Image: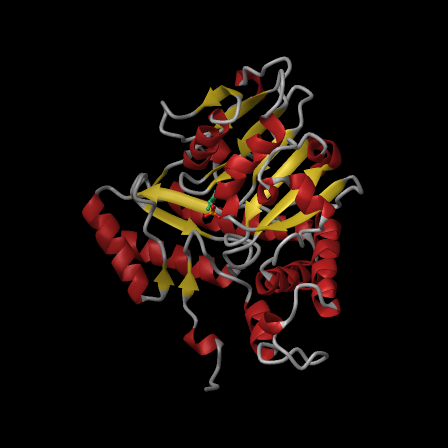
Length: 369
Ligand SMILES: *Cc1c(COP(=O)(O)O)cnc(C)c1O
C-alpha cells in the first residue's frame, strides 16, 4: 500500500461514471477506515445516526448555497439513476385530469425520457432535432409550446451528442423540468425558472448510485396518491430522503464534491469560467484544423461538458483513440450511436488534462492530416 496517488492517475475523459476531483478522492481515502470524530467508516454507520444527519445536512446546505436555492425547493437524495426519473417525473406530476407535458428533444436521453412519459399521460414533442441528427438546440421561436402544459421537459446537456443549451429554453409560464445529469453544478442556474431538476450523480457530482432531485413544493403537492411508496416524491420529501436506506457513502462523496466547489473553486460562476476556458481549447483546435476534425454540434449549441467530433474516416478515429490511450488520455471513444470521438471534460477535469489532449490533437493532425 501507499505510494503517490497522483503518480498512477491518467487523464480520464470518460462520459460517466467519470472523473472526480483528486482532493475529494484523497479525503475519502484518508477517512475511509475511520472518520476521525467517529471511529467508524462512513460505509459502516447507520443512516439515522447523528453523523449521517450531519453529512446529509451539510451536502444539502452546500447545494443550496451553490445553486442559491430558494426555500420552497426541496432537495432529495434518491436512487435508480436519471433513468428512473424519466418515469418518476411523469408518474408524480403528469398523472391526473387535464394534465399534459411538453418535451424538447435534443438528443438520445430526451428520447428515453419521453418514451417513459408517454406511458403515464399526454405528451407533446414541441421540438425535435432528430431529423437533423441532433446537432443543435432550438431557438425559443421554434418551440411550439402548448398553452396549458403541466411542465416543459428538456435535457440541458445531451451527453451523447455533445449538445447543450446555453441558457434555459422558454416555457410559456409552465415550470421547466430538466435532466441535468451531465452539466449540473457546471455553471450558475436560474433555479426560479424550474419546477424540478434531476441528475444522476456519476457524471459531475459524485459516484454512481445516487440521484439528486431538486423539486419545487407545488410540484410535490401534485404527486398522485396511489403511487408505489418508493416512487412518490411526497413520501421522499416527508421522510427527508430517509424512507429507506439512502446511499450514505455516495452522499458523503457529494458532500466533499460540493465543498470542493465552494472552497477550492469558489462557486459556480468561477466553475463556469473554467469550463468555458477548457472547452474553448478543444473547439479552437477543431476549428483551426481545416476540416480534419469536424465538430458534431453546431457552434452555438456546443457542449462545454462533452466535446464530440469526427475524423476523416473510422480507421483514423480508431488510431486516434488507441494512440491517445497509450499516452494516458483515456475514454475518448464516442458513443456507439454517434461514433467518432467524445471528450468529456466535467468539472473535475483539470485544465492540464485538456491541454494535454489539445496538444495530442495537434500532433496527431501534423502526423496524419
Ligand atoms: C447518463 C445520463 C442519463 C442516465 O443516467 P443513469 O443514472 O444511468 O440512469 C440520463 N440523462 C443524461 C443527460 C445522462 O447523461
